[in-house]
Each structure stands twice: as C-alpha cells, then as structure tokens.
Length: 182
Image 1: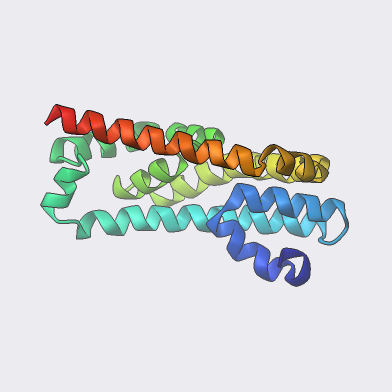
Image 2: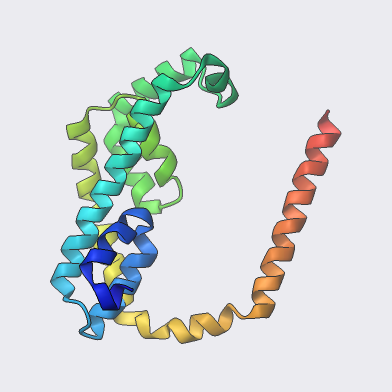
C-alpha cells in the first residue's frame, strides 16, 4: 500500500506503528519508490503526532478514571503526586530515555500527560529524541531493507510455532503462580 499510495498511507501508518513502517519506508526510498527526504519529514511529523496523541490520552484519561480504576492501576494520590513531581524535575530525561530505548515509550508518553507535564517541554523533548530515532530507522531500512527475505526465512512457520508455544507456556506459568498465591 505504501508503494502504491505513498505518503497518504505512510503518514497514518507511521503514527500508529512508527518503527516498522519507517524501516519499510526507508527501504522503499532506497528503491526510489518514495523520496528519501519526503519519507524523513513524514515519519518525523508522524512520530510527533503519535506521541502527542499518547500525551493527550494520558492527560484526558486520568481525570475520567474512577478512583476504583486508579487504584487498580496503582495510581494512588501519593503515586500521582510523585509522578507529577518526577516529570516536573526530570521529564525531558525520562522522555528521551523512553523514546531512545523504545521499551517504555507508551508508558512514559501517557505518564507525561497524566503528570500534566507542560506541553511545550513535552514537544521539545520528543523532537530532540525523535529526530535521531527516526533517522536511525530510515537508515536501517535504506541500507538493510533488502535483507527482508533473509529475516522472513528466519521467521519460518517452525519459528512461529515455537514462539506461540513459548508464549502459551509463559501465560500458563503466570496464571499457575497467580492461582498459587491466592
């Protein structure tokens, strides 16, 4: 779809799932199907839009959660106060680390909204961390995108079966331990 419809499809897809789409777009740019400079601009804007949406969800959802749900999520008043204080003191560092590691991005972005981090600081931190991250993924696709066939062979039907079986074992162990604690 990206190769056929170009940036019209790339932009919303990059908002939803940035890194994978960015690598694919970088690969399509290496094949001259898409313009490299347009891809770079598009994925950076999409990254900022996606992060802003997560910030907004965090900011709006916290107020609409009932005290029961806040308790279930571990958001006691003291934790919320600590969260707000942490983002006021170290918000930029937290966001940059979360974006560059890509492990805690969703949680940190929504937590920034929930902590009412100033939006200008939020955007600045995301731009500073987002540009190198986007450039890395575009370069990865541009330089190594042709290796998708090799990666595809690694993810054969047998590998997928083992991954599913491993996931089932992990879920069963989790529920067994949970039941044993009761």
